[in-house]
Image (cartoon, rainbow, N blue to C red):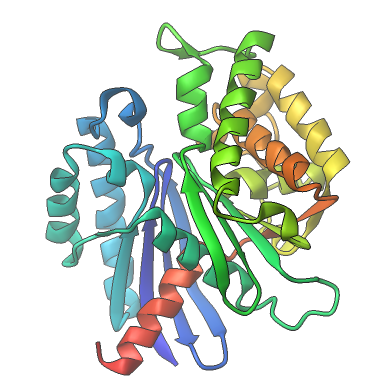
Length: 320
């Protein structure tokens, strides 16, 4: 097995995985997996630039991760940056900072590359299960964008569209610099219309309705699962490969969009960094389920981060 480190830097969070990986068998053994909410995409949708304070939060997390990677002795590090850094005019500042701290340049991947990495990470261990029909539709609901990938043993089609929990919150639920608490019916209607337009765009290239199993990734989906199970705290093992029905997703989404900041923060499994954006993220999930006619979503804790680790191990073994 090859020991690798994978970093996924998104719009809302930056995550680290250090693992021993065997690409041939699909085996991946976690040594350290962690997440830090940094809000790198703070204000990007409005200004087109990464804010100085957002960059510093991200660099602070990178310094912490560098110490862990060194301690565990990873042979290969791959750092992938997604939606926020694709969109920013000053992304060179971000690239230089990461290079200085971690010694590698972040790969600012395209939406299509992001989709393929998410699919690989989410489905590598699902292949061959009799209880899950193919093709899969993998949806990765991030902070700035959502990736859609349809495939079985391999990707058939993928598309990234700009509907993420942070982007939707900033675009529709912020007034005078503050998140409306709770959002108004008009705000929810406008956000839903934006999501539906993005789904129309995704459906131009990805056959969403052909999917037989919906697999949901990332913090909005895993948090909905934790709420659905009434978990007393966030529990990765209980969440991974859990199934949440459409009716339960609808109930939770409606409840979150009616609730105040204090009520959402009091949910035992809620990460503090998701309190303001979880309502938008849940609405994206609900809208997708309605579009594809999914009766349930299979929730995966393995996602783009695992896909990055598999790719890093394959490259290390190939000597590239």
